[in-house]
Amino acid sequence: MEISLAQQAISLAIQGNWNEAIKINLEILKSSPHDTDSLNRLAKAYAEIGEIDKAKKTAQKVLKIEPTNHIASKSLDKWQAVKNGIIPTKSSTSTESFLEDPGKTKIVTLINPGDKQIIANLDSGDIVKLLPHPHSVAVVTDNNKYIGKLPDDLAARLKSLIKKGNKYDVIIKSVEKKQVTVFIRSDTFSFPTEKIDYVSFTPPELVHKDVPIMDDIEEGSAEETD
Image (cartoon, helix red, strand yellow):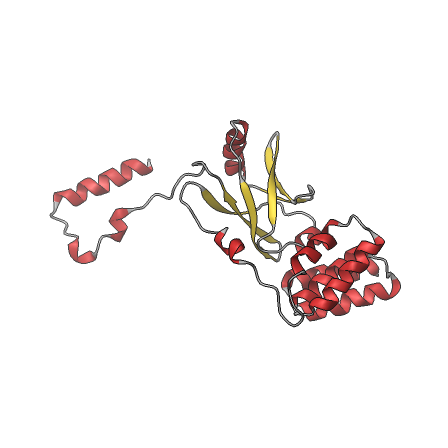
């Protein structure tokens, strides 16, 4: 029964149904008061509805049970300056972190997502990292918990660049049910820029079938896509 309730709590967290998540986690804790996973989920749910004092106290309970618990300590740091009744928002620094720079940044939806419990504890703005393997590149938390993998084509490209010394910052952009999107940023050009089909943006009134230059443009576009 406990496993079933835990799965319900995780699913509710992923859906953002925080009030129901609180009820389920409290139900689990009635019979398992030292369950740190449930306490962490409860703390996060309290914070999401603005009950910061309860969130802090719950996270502190986790640290009394397990002093090295990374999730609880990180959460307390995040809520330190937040007052009760205020739902935490991301700082301007986090927002600026998502500014796109063609060729140097890329938004990626991960494949083969990992454990639901780990994903449920992620927030937009969390800093994560790339972990190359012989045939893939994983995205993991800062304590090496698996989140998901980069698509194969991008993984092959970045593995080669990482071997050459390129460094990448990776930030959680969004977390939805069974889907995690990350923002990858580098100081060097690492990603192909989007090709623009200029013909498709040509105003209709300027297009005339008897103008030879348009044929040349179309032929050039076709050659580029071959």
